[in-house]
Amino acid sequence: MAREFTAGQRASLDQAIRAAEQVSRCEFSVFVGATDGDPRAFARRLHAALSTPARSVLVMVDPTARSVEVVTGSQVRRVLSDQEVALAVLEMRSEFAGGDLVRGLRRGVGMLAMSARAPRTLHAAPAAP
Image 1 (cartoon, rainbow, N blue to C red):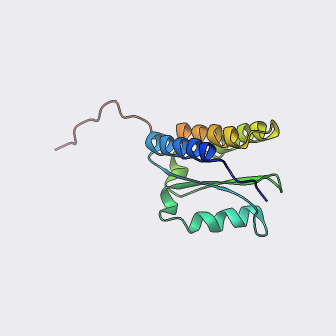
Image 2: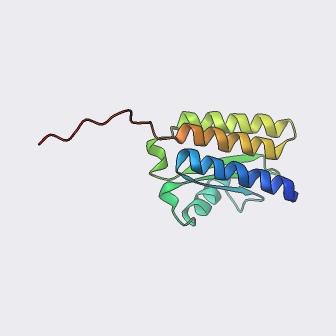
Image 3: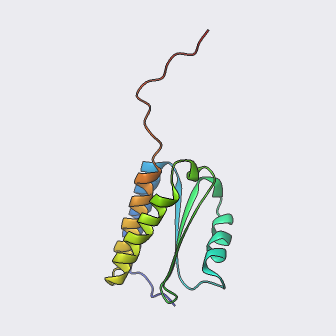
């Protein structure tokens, strides 16, 4: 089972999540703990239970099973590719291997948020009459 986070670690994760939500306009959730059964299926169930799953990103980590899953909603998948998710997971795993779970989560959430930003519109052509 995952160890409990300190108050400072929780605050650090909360700050990373808030920043990610501001950058991407997606909702982020992080779950760290033991999974029940298949990790991917468990992560999908958690994601489906969120208040707005279509606009949400769930990062699930089971440190004991060494499992990392990222589930994205239908609206998020429009701006966040599987390759970008895979890169964020790779970054998280690298930090986890170094023993820093919180840093890995912060970096992963930040990478996902930056990748999920909707492209800026420089200008919009006026609608044709």
